[in-house]
Image 1 (cartoon, rainbow, N blue to C red):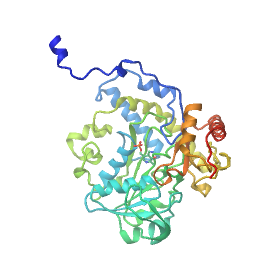
Image 2 (cartoon, helix red, strand yellow; image 1 turned 180 degrees about the vertical axis):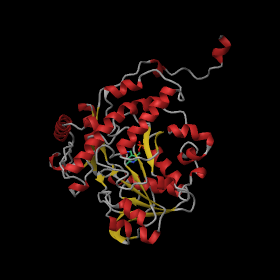
Image 3 (cartoon, helix red, strand yellow; image 1 turned 90 degrees about the horizontal axis):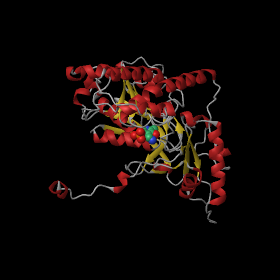
Image 4 (cartoon, rainbow, N blue to C red; image 1 turned 180 degrees about the horizontal axis):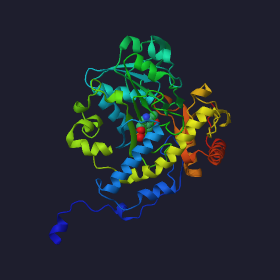
Amino acid sequence: RAMATSLLHVAPPEELLRPLAVPERLLLGPGPSNVPGRIRAAGARQLLGHMHPEVLQVMDEIKAGIRYAFQTQNRLTLAISGSGHCAMEAALFNLLEKGDTVLVAVNGIWGARAADIARRLGANVHELLKAPGKYFTPQDIEQVSAGHCAVSTSCPPVWSPSPCVTQGLVQHKPLVLFITHGESSTGVLQPLEGLGELCHRHGCLLLVDAVASLGGAPIFMDQQEIDVLYSGSQKVLNAPPGSAPISFSERARAPGSDTGPTAPSCARGCLTWGWSSLWRRRWVRGKPTTSTATTERGQREDTALCSWKCAWAAFDAREKSPRSVMLSPGTVLGSPGAVGLKKARLPTITTVRVPEGYDWRDITAFLMDEHGMEIAGGLGPTVGKVLRIGLMGCNSTRGNVERVLGALRDALQRCHRSRL
Ligand code: PMP
């Protein structure tokens, strides 16, 4: 025993011996959001083997839930073990290979991130740039238009203040167009109407990031002719992070546009699963690796809620009677919203300009320390300029709107304000 102990040169960390303490917090940032008890309880159950029939059944149920949430009949619909980023990679890895041309709509950090991943894949990347806070019209996407150029190709890019000319589908003839439905770094909701049809007219696939919007803003994958759609679990779906829904249309899987067998990552190479017999059994269930079963069970519980929400969103869109709780920027202490047009505001994340004279860090720290509440500062192009307040899924209640407004008023009275 003495000898065994002497082999251990690193002492056991004392902090790991203390019981875990998790404070109560209201998560009103851009995600993650709070997880309801039913979903937490699902994750606390005993583990099963990832190929046990009960687990495979849960996977089938999740696939059905995702099809409902996305409003799609696509066969290749599954939950990736990983966060939204992993789904973004899976989408790009399976659509593009070296030398393919991709057009990426960049009006915040997420388009810039997709362009970065595509560049690393060796794709021929063209960026369609708009100033943060703006969205793309079908005309912007199709043809030459006046946008805002990046003055650096860093991620995120730095936008030049004066407009310049960028080119679209007609000039670049890309294989894929990437666009973000809910730009969580700026608070912009991208209208998707007509984009699928437009892309298909130009022989291009439409890839949409709905990580920050699914369940909070209507999206209809089949009707809107979206070829690849993905989201994440920790935002409107109110599940723990680590399970990202994704779906591929038959067009995206069609031979010719399929690059699956050469996808540079096995775990993310979804399309290989359909063709290789090695993966077939797993692909049928929609899962290539040992699943993160805890989050998956969380998501199984979640899809019931999510399905309901999406059904509501669909109804809402039809009835044109928005009933979601949406923070009106004007009501946040008189500070203007960062997104001008109301129809372009993301219902799940409101961006509000940092009230004059205040440091955003003081405000977010004050809310955390004094009110047990998380809101966030800006991200990428909006750092230092805005506060981001998320109302997602079960957190989207009038009570929480009152709480966050009250906490912000309190912050403005008690945080330091510079006289400049
Ligand atoms: N896309 C968008 C629009 C997002 O808001 C996020 C997360 N904030 C991501 C992708 C990446 O997702 P994750 O953090 O789950 O990896």
